[in-house]
Length: 313
Image (tube, rainbow, N blue to C red):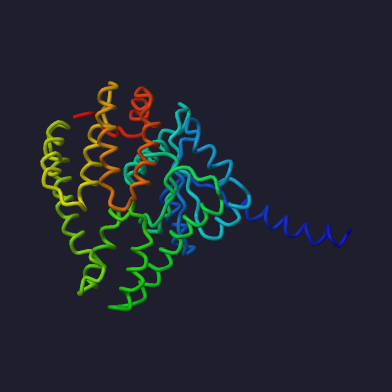
């Protein structure tokens, strides 16, 4: 009995010590710096801690469990990006977190991103998942991408291309468009276009031209005209991103249910245009969105909290 007691206590103490060390930070730049020093990646939890039910469930069932934190502390710096309703939340932190939501194009909660020390998004969990092993598998793919990119940094030519291509395949489709530098590096090394990314690079160039023109437009209405013109001539690789741009223009300033419904139709079209989704996946995502948009006044409140980073032009 005593031998059992004293063999178990050190293991329990080690677990408690590990969990205590796995604290969720709130400073973005500090998390990146610490990740660089450790040679690891950042797990960024985008959450609405006092209003998002799925976020609360993800925390209680997975992210804040001791056994998960024990695993996470070995692979990540932990960063909480909270966008709560409560009025006493620090203004500076709220501004940082809203800017991060915009930077990483976070459009739903919960979202958990894997970032490298440069802030590049390498992997992520989009939505609620209650199975801890599945969350670890999904986020572990982001860890693997970080390892491959570190490996590629020490290589040249075709040897460098192999880990870059493997990393690109593992990055979720939702995040590929946020990694243009990695794509361009692959295109430059991939002289035979094994990856097929040259067409994607050209599509991205057209997309960026459209975004620049829309940003320079004097009003949101004028920007919508530009985006609609681009959509009329869009290649398949660009259609979803252009629809996302249109959705953001519509949702930024919604004030009426009719405006919410118009934005919702564009969101459904975004799903239809996603080349990475099966028909079953598309229907599942549409079903989830119908729940999100079921109460237009809730969507209006969310827009004011999350999406609107500038006055409606």
